[in-house]
Image 1 (cartoon, rainbow, N blue to C red):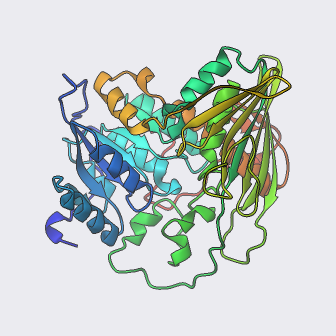
Image 2: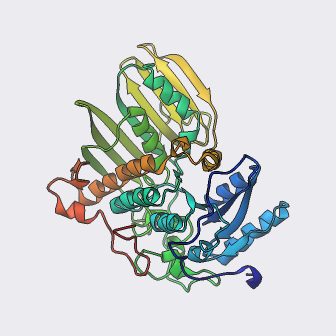
Image 3: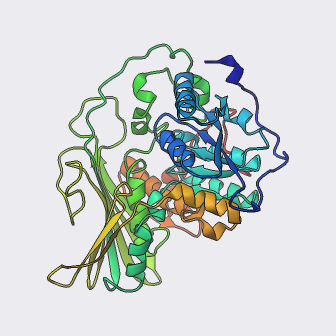
Length: 435
């Protein structure tokens, strides 16, 4: 790595001067830092680079080879070279940065968002916003305490799905009683990878962050970390969180009262810990009326349903289907940004639409107004959908149904489940009780 562009240090003091403010006009430049740029972080860079009056002021990644590649790509595209960091805490000392856009592994999302809020930065954080139930509460608390705008990376909230949900609220498909979240994606085995030395230029301690110390393997690093409980939340917390969020949004509910999940890691003999096949059922009490959400994950052979996946990359079927007394409505995965309704016993095609939208542009627009209500995917909603993922994974791992009490934020009569709401942190990477 070019050492002229390498900085590293400790966390900025919580009382640092805050630059973020109501911008005087759309012509004011918003300075954004992109953090974690190997996978989805590339999309963050692409989105911000395409916006007028938005500058990617800094890039942070613990893998210097990835960091240098992204810096080079920006310069090749004629963009100003951003500052480069491997340690987010040093980046946060820069008072001229308005916002931080986080696309690191799941196990770092909450702590890094808390740090950014404490440093006076607004935050775009990828899904799922937390690694466990405790963190889902803490990330919301940090946003509120430090008066920060925090957008969740559930991109469908800025897509044509908004129009589809509007039709549902207006009664297009009648009384809504059930929704299904479908995440059928072709994913091959990850095989087995041996322990090996940490690659040159990888700051592995920073990558591990709050997670337990573990010898380095390729399967526990780039992307495949999704399939290990120490870092990821399986495909329900990877791709499935998008569909769970849309399904819950469409039902008009918040926390479930009962959760039951079964599944397994089928077919493949490899390092993966999380299930590659899962069926989770959530029951909700909506002012005395029961509603139901079923979330399914499959990693291999599957079919298309309700038009989802047809004409796309076979055999993927990714989206949400919402059922009512007068028909049903299918909302495609955010990569397609499409919905189609089917009405009556004959399932006649009803209103439909297509528009990808732009969750990042909505975030920037909200930074200019400083109005939390202008965020399409506010962290409060993202955190609730994320808890559904965690409760389903807990039910799967414990092998039993969970009775959740939203008022106490606990599982009734299940101390073992409640103990799993919060993981043990590797010091000094600790999400605090009081943010």
